[in-house]
Length: 346
Image (cartoon, rainbow, N blue to C red; front, side):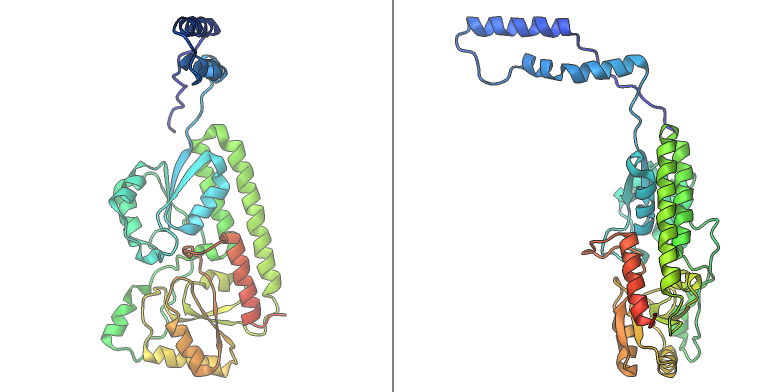
């Protein structure tokens, strides 16, 4: 924790201000007509109460604590930190709206922000550039918010019939699925982990942080309840998505994710995989293929055109669209409405 620093302002006494004001009036009278502009003495007199209050605070040992500086690797972590920390924190996001977070490259200024931050929030393995900067600049101050959560293995899919080049494109899709935030109960746990660290860095605000974290948990629990109730009676349990970002959502609400592409949104599916998904869509009377806000929809549209299905946007909330007007909670509710329609839920 950084030590609180008392305000270093010299007290201004009313006696000195009175003498200064009287002297200014005397000089104005000797010099002819007085200026209509406020004098420095008048400005000082106006500021006297604030200066006196600051001096009193300093004399009594009170101090204004600096907010905790938080760097958040991408949007859901920015949202959680802002909700839990409130005015006890300043949150700097690394991924701007409209940028696909997998593709993020850090500027020198952003690396400097990571080095200077009190806390860095990230998910290890999700953004290689952030992983590298954290390891070099903030290993002792970073929180991998996925630590402690039950992680799902990455879906590698069936790549039978791929060429060597196509198989190599999928070679990095192993490991754990990083998209933990699409389960609201995971978001509640992420908020609790952030709150615990913030409370140690700002003990004078610990009660406020704890209260905000409690409200955040209640909100995420309510969101989870809405998903559970709305998706309980869907006619279709198979959710066909352009890339496998929705494993935690599917796992939480008894859906089966069928990814056209794997965990990497840039990986092109093989012709064999495209045929396989199209056959599954036709055989199971699947009516909707979901694509994402920050990813080219051409793959989803190709299968929809071939099978007669419709397409719909399902937001993985990896980052906000540049024209987004909602936040995590409202976008998750938009996703729920989309799923209720697309999965024929009653």
